[in-house]
Length: 136
Length: 85
Length: 91
Image (cartoon, rainbow over all chains, first blue to last red; front, top):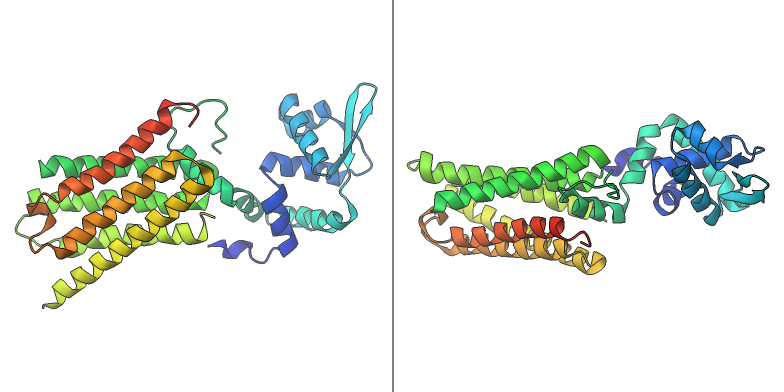
């Protein structure tokens, strides 16, 4: 069942399992990765990804805390640029390649994560849908 | 009385199956697929039970009955082992 | 014993074992997540295991005895788990 993902490099799979919580987070990271020389602001990221500013800001802050992005306070607010530490760089490069070539497989791995499977099972029985239900 | 029980059990199982498979469609968490299918088969199990009792009392449907339950449970176990954690 | 009966006994044994294993998994998930739903599902599958185990040892068939009450209990537990999950937002 997990066979399709087995030929992705082990470090990529481990990275996804431990560091990547959502597709949005991955898209944000890869966007920064594509333009390493550029410092982004939250609303630029939001516009680029088509999400709202608060959400983008949350993702950027998370990436910062994870050591995948570097943030700096500039005049008009925080700016973020790609900043993975040396050991992780190769993994993120491989992840970017994998996402470009095997998008569905990578997304499948994000959602196949253990804790989420149990929470997904439990959440499936919530019939009343409300906004803070992470659902899917 | 027994008929009502089996109908209730079938409905409950079917509800679980629907909830889990819908959630699987949204999130693609594979464990939901296996558990959803398990409850679908358990619903079938209760339906066959009802058929065995009320509709075809002269036919022995036990192998089919137990077959549906076993099929569902094997799928659930597969999901528990490979996709739940 | 005719082949049919042997197959049925075999299937019942397999079903009971599967239910017991499933119940054990759910028990572990309950310990891990502290989510009551898993505890209730563990209980439900435990009761289902008993249901089919009892069936393996009765000479008349389930549909002719009171055994359906055991099955009912298991599914009521599941129903309760669903209702419980939807009642309190804290769940």
